Amino acid sequence: PIYPHAQALERIAAAAEAAHRGPAKLVLTARAENYLHGRADLDDTIRRLQDFAAAGADVVYAPGLTDAADIAAVVQAVDKPVNVLLLRGGPSIAELSELGVHRISVGGALAAIGLGALVDAATAFRSGDSAFLDGVRTGREAMGRYFPAS
Image (cartoon, rainbow, N blue to C red):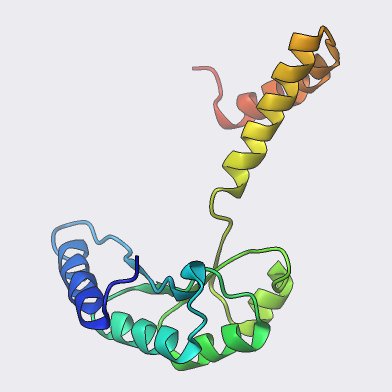
C-alpha cells in the first residue's frame, strides 16, 4: 500500500503539474501514509513530505501521527502547511494549533457520526419508540440555515 519513494515522488510531481496548470489552481495535498500502515518511521515520513513539497505539493499530510513531538518535528522539517488527522489519544485542536499545524482533518468521523445518528433513529423507530422525533426540529433548523428555501 505504500509506493516506493521514487514512485511516490513521481506521482506527486505529476499531480502537482496537473493541479497547477490552467485557469484554476487546485490545492494539492500530498500524503505520506506510513503511520496508517503500521510503518512508524518518522525519518522516512519527513523525507517523503519534504520531497513531496519540493515536487509541488501545496500541503503535506502524514495521517496517523499522534505524538506531539513527532508532529512538531514534521512541522519544523517542511516548508509547506502541515495537515494532521485529529485522533483520540493525540493532541487536541488547540495543541495542534500551538504546534504549528495549519489544517486539521477528521477523516470520515463526521459521516460516521451522522450514520450513527441515522442508525439510532431507525432502531428506535423499528422498536416503536418515537422519541427520535425530538431531533427533527434541530435538524430542520440546521437545514433552513444552510439550505434556505428559494
